[in-house]
Length: 173
Image (spheres, rainbow, N blue to C red):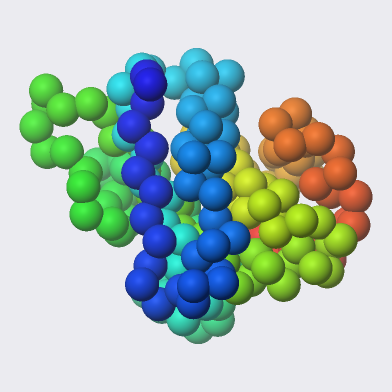
Protein backbone atom coordinates (compact mmCIF):
# COMPACT_ATOMS: atom_id res chain seq x y z
CA UNK A 1 0.00 0.00 0.00
CA UNK A 2 1.43 3.36 -0.94
CA UNK A 3 0.21 5.00 2.30
CA UNK A 4 0.44 4.08 5.95
CA UNK A 5 -2.89 4.61 7.67
CA UNK A 6 -2.66 3.99 11.40
CA UNK A 7 -6.08 3.28 12.90
CA UNK A 8 -6.38 3.17 16.67
CA UNK A 9 -9.40 2.28 18.80
CA UNK A 10 -9.31 3.95 22.21
CA UNK A 11 -9.71 1.49 25.07
CA UNK A 12 -12.49 3.64 26.55
CA UNK A 13 -14.82 2.59 23.70
CA UNK A 14 -17.36 -0.08 24.57
CA UNK A 15 -17.13 -3.35 22.66
CA UNK A 16 -20.29 -2.38 20.75
CA UNK A 17 -18.86 1.02 19.79
CA UNK A 18 -15.52 -0.46 18.74
CA UNK A 19 -17.31 -3.07 16.62
CA UNK A 20 -18.88 -0.30 14.50
CA UNK A 21 -15.45 0.70 13.18
CA UNK A 22 -14.43 -1.31 10.12
CA UNK A 23 -10.67 -0.74 10.26
CA UNK A 24 -9.86 -2.14 6.76
CA UNK A 25 -12.64 0.02 5.26
CA UNK A 26 -11.26 3.14 7.00
CA UNK A 27 -7.74 2.35 5.78
CA UNK A 28 -8.99 1.86 2.21
CA UNK A 29 -11.07 5.06 2.31
CA UNK A 30 -8.16 7.18 3.56
CA UNK A 31 -5.86 5.67 0.93
CA UNK A 32 -8.42 6.41 -1.80
CA UNK A 33 -8.76 10.05 -0.73
CA UNK A 34 -4.98 10.47 -0.51
CA UNK A 35 -4.57 8.94 -3.96
CA UNK A 36 -7.30 11.09 -5.50
CA UNK A 37 -5.86 14.21 -3.86
CA UNK A 38 -2.41 13.34 -5.32
CA UNK A 39 -0.68 13.05 -1.94
CA UNK A 40 2.87 11.70 -1.91
CA UNK A 41 3.23 7.91 -1.63
CA UNK A 42 4.22 6.52 1.78
CA UNK A 43 2.54 9.43 3.58
CA UNK A 44 1.40 8.51 7.09
CA UNK A 45 -1.95 9.44 8.67
CA UNK A 46 -3.31 8.46 12.09
CA UNK A 47 -7.04 8.02 12.75
CA UNK A 48 -8.10 7.59 16.36
CA UNK A 49 -11.60 6.44 17.26
CA UNK A 50 -12.46 7.49 20.79
CA UNK A 51 -15.34 8.44 23.07
CA UNK A 52 -17.01 11.80 23.71
CA UNK A 53 -14.90 12.47 26.81
CA UNK A 54 -11.66 12.17 24.83
CA UNK A 55 -12.89 14.46 22.04
CA UNK A 56 -14.15 16.93 24.63
CA UNK A 57 -10.71 16.99 26.28
CA UNK A 58 -9.03 17.61 22.90
CA UNK A 59 -11.59 20.27 22.03
CA UNK A 60 -11.00 22.01 25.37
CA UNK A 61 -7.22 21.84 25.06
CA UNK A 62 -6.87 22.87 21.42
CA UNK A 63 -9.96 24.95 20.66
CA UNK A 64 -10.95 26.33 24.09
CA UNK A 65 -14.37 24.70 23.69
CA UNK A 66 -15.40 22.59 26.66
CA UNK A 67 -17.81 20.36 24.79
CA UNK A 68 -17.64 17.10 22.88
CA UNK A 69 -17.49 17.17 19.10
CA UNK A 70 -17.63 14.63 16.31
CA UNK A 71 -14.25 15.01 14.62
CA UNK A 72 -11.04 16.95 15.10
CA UNK A 73 -8.03 16.99 12.84
CA UNK A 74 -4.48 18.16 13.31
CA UNK A 75 -2.16 18.72 10.38
CA UNK A 76 1.43 17.74 11.08
CA UNK A 77 2.75 21.16 10.26
CA UNK A 78 5.99 22.02 12.00
CA UNK A 79 4.66 25.55 12.48
CA UNK A 80 1.57 24.38 14.36
CA UNK A 81 1.45 23.91 18.13
CA UNK A 82 -0.97 21.04 17.45
CA UNK A 83 1.46 19.28 15.11
CA UNK A 84 1.63 15.99 17.02
CA UNK A 85 -1.41 15.45 19.18
CA UNK A 86 -0.82 11.72 18.88
CA UNK A 87 2.58 10.05 19.11
CA UNK A 88 4.26 8.85 15.97
CA UNK A 89 5.26 11.93 14.03
CA UNK A 90 8.63 11.08 12.48
CA UNK A 91 11.48 13.37 13.40
CA UNK A 92 13.96 11.93 10.92
CA UNK A 93 14.01 13.43 7.43
CA UNK A 94 14.39 9.91 6.02
CA UNK A 95 11.02 8.89 7.49
CA UNK A 96 7.90 9.01 5.31
CA UNK A 97 5.98 12.30 5.44
CA UNK A 98 3.52 12.50 8.34
CA UNK A 99 0.32 14.22 7.23
CA UNK A 100 -1.48 14.45 10.56
CA UNK A 101 -4.02 13.07 13.00
CA UNK A 102 -7.79 12.67 12.94
CA UNK A 103 -9.85 11.94 16.06
CA UNK A 104 -13.43 10.71 15.69
CA UNK A 105 -15.98 10.32 18.47
CA UNK A 106 -17.73 7.01 17.87
CA UNK A 107 -20.68 7.76 20.22
CA UNK A 108 -21.30 11.08 18.44
CA UNK A 109 -20.99 9.38 15.06
CA UNK A 110 -23.62 6.84 16.11
CA UNK A 111 -26.01 9.58 17.28
CA UNK A 112 -25.49 11.57 14.10
CA UNK A 113 -26.00 8.49 11.93
CA UNK A 114 -29.37 7.89 13.58
CA UNK A 115 -30.36 11.57 13.23
CA UNK A 116 -29.38 11.60 9.54
CA UNK A 117 -30.91 8.18 8.77
CA UNK A 118 -27.48 6.84 7.81
CA UNK A 119 -25.75 3.60 8.63
CA UNK A 120 -23.08 4.03 11.32
CA UNK A 121 -20.42 3.08 8.76
CA UNK A 122 -21.59 5.91 6.47
CA UNK A 123 -21.32 8.53 9.22
CA UNK A 124 -17.94 7.20 10.37
CA UNK A 125 -16.72 7.42 6.76
CA UNK A 126 -18.11 10.96 6.53
CA UNK A 127 -16.26 12.09 9.65
CA UNK A 128 -13.00 10.48 8.50
CA UNK A 129 -13.22 12.14 5.08
CA UNK A 130 -14.18 15.46 6.67
CA UNK A 131 -11.19 15.35 9.04
CA UNK A 132 -8.84 14.28 6.27
CA UNK A 133 -9.99 17.09 4.00
CA UNK A 134 -9.26 19.56 6.80
CA UNK A 135 -5.72 18.19 7.05
CA UNK A 136 -5.40 18.64 3.28
CA UNK A 137 -6.34 22.30 3.58
CA UNK A 138 -10.09 22.33 2.96
CA UNK A 139 -12.30 24.36 5.28
CA UNK A 140 -15.92 25.44 5.64
CA UNK A 141 -15.77 28.83 7.34
CA UNK A 142 -16.99 30.73 4.28
CA UNK A 143 -19.91 29.69 2.02
CA UNK A 144 -17.63 29.09 -0.97
CA UNK A 145 -15.26 26.95 1.12
CA UNK A 146 -18.19 25.03 2.59
CA UNK A 147 -19.57 24.29 -0.89
CA UNK A 148 -16.18 23.07 -2.11
CA UNK A 149 -15.67 20.86 0.93
CA UNK A 150 -19.19 19.41 0.72
CA UNK A 151 -18.62 18.68 -2.98
CA UNK A 152 -15.40 16.79 -2.16
CA UNK A 153 -17.19 14.83 0.58
CA UNK A 154 -20.01 13.94 -1.79
CA UNK A 155 -17.48 13.00 -4.46
CA UNK A 156 -16.06 10.37 -2.11
CA UNK A 157 -19.23 9.32 -0.30
CA UNK A 158 -22.17 10.21 -2.56
CA UNK A 159 -24.90 12.85 -2.13
CA UNK A 160 -26.74 10.77 0.49
CA UNK A 161 -24.13 11.86 3.05
CA UNK A 162 -25.69 15.35 3.19
CA UNK A 163 -29.32 14.39 2.46
CA UNK A 164 -30.49 15.04 6.05
CA UNK A 165 -29.17 18.60 5.96
CA UNK A 166 -26.60 20.40 8.11
CA UNK A 167 -28.52 20.07 11.39
CA UNK A 168 -27.91 16.29 11.46
CA UNK A 169 -24.16 16.82 11.90
CA UNK A 170 -22.17 18.63 14.56
CA UNK A 171 -19.06 18.81 12.37
CA UNK A 172 -17.12 20.57 15.10
CA UNK A 173 -18.94 23.88 15.07
